[in-house]
Length: 362
Image 1: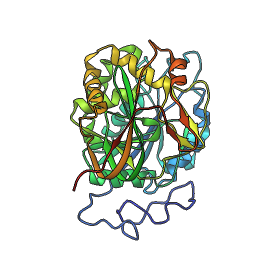
Image 2: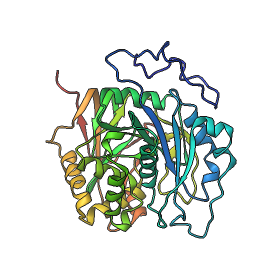
Image 3: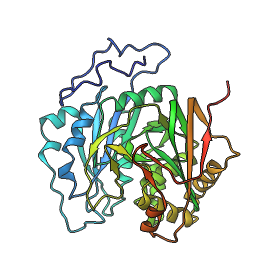
Image 4: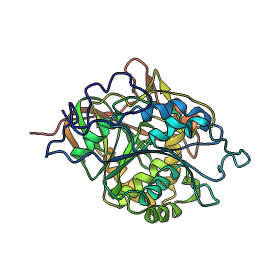
């Protein structure tokens, strides 16, 4: 058992987290495991959705180990809703929020950096506060996350301390979109992109300074400013950081809401779905720009879909790789949505072809 798991993590807990004992059942720290890092959650939202984030915040505060901080990163004026003023709800500023470390932070700049603000603002805020081991976990504002999310991510972080780690990921090139699904076993697979809606852990040292991060974001072409998952993945690969998707763990999402203002959000029976035609078409557009930021991702994605190139995996896993060739030009999302078939019985995409990813040879 890893030192990051509390045996009672599955039980319902108080929404006001109590600090765990320094040592005790499930929290002992053998010499082979690194110390528990400081955990910082971060998310961005919009003026019309911030009032609906109470359940999300409760699910973050209820994690064990509890977060040291929950950063709510907001632009001064939201790019897609410039005329709507911010109305900060009480649940983000009351005593329970303060006890959980909830911190509403506005960006200093007049322009909205887009959803990538969730990470850049958190890194900037932590630089002024703490220099110790820190991990940033980014999440979406319209999801509710299960207890045990932090414990699973920290366990994987203990095994891969220099990697970015998440529960969902994909591979998108200018011509194809690929995912790994239908896995048996437990382990991690290296992918070109991590999908932030299912939570992503970034070790502080993989991100550079806040100034480095902001400099990188300024180079992103404007039409791609809302593709934060693609942007972060490109930055990580430029910095030589491995990107790992977890398998064999419980789905991180236990609920959420949908509205017509989200950038992408798809849920089926509380199970996340990794085929988002809207998001994948946005990725395709950014990659097709041939901007230097995204070229390495395109090459990685082309290698990933190549059956002759081995998929890098850790642990014992047997999976299927499912690849889809974009069939429609431009941003024709409805056409792409019709072209792929979702199997409700198996919660998997059944559009061929599938290629098997076998366990590593011993």
